[in-house]
Length: 343
Image (cartoon, rainbow, N blue to C red; front, top):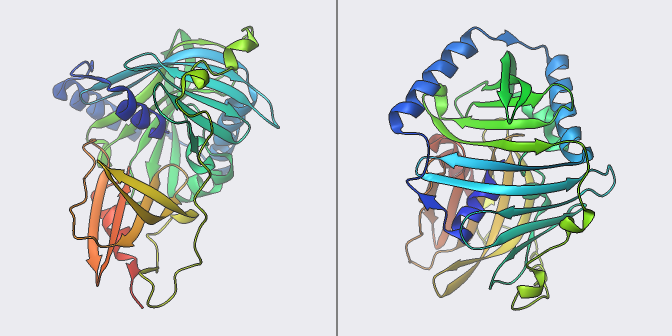
């Protein structure tokens, strides 16, 4: 659920040092969270499934508007969201309120990113289905396989009462989370990601204002930046090559427990003035996304993400390079990189 804010952070140049959390404050909150989890009520699999299904359906089918923020160490950003619920083809527009103008416009499963002075870009379904406050509807079984849910307490978010739940991982390959769900609509109002063991808060997204009445001008769903794009045509997707075979590069072996392949495609990676082609594999456990990039080793160093909470691991294999990156603990991305080998 954090990908959108991270992309906008890169595009819009979010504020640094503006977070309301100091290191001590984040640690105190994490300790309080650990204590509350120990005292929380464990949900049965059926109860947990009901919570997740209701939250997933509310994000898609309810009509709402609001302002929410993303807060992490050294980063703070705010977004305005307009969402028109429709079980067949939901519509929404969300815009960054900080930095250069950036917006995402959705019609059904099609999501376009517009940024002033940049070419429109398609966002794949695996990513867009996790935009706050959504929970991927086709992966609820995966969440239940890898996490247990506990009911914690009633909280207030954006002036509304919501029930908080912890999502506690069953192993050390993933991070714990906490979410607060509106008891009337089922919509997630707040989502927090913790470091392993609830040791500290990594980041959170939460509504500051929320209106579920459905009363907003539908013209606000239309893109404001589309006409300001230097090229209004959206680039066609790069066609995927045939599946890799022996001698053509590393192939995928046994994956870390609880993750499954969601998508495989060819992507173009730009670093400065250089553009490289790589095959990208996207994996998920129902909450977290991990990407593995397989490309020919050019001998140039790979830029590591400078975002706390994002793990990175790279390895060379006889002229090939495998790079794994994801919002999971470091040992998890290492296992993903080591799952690819030459035959």
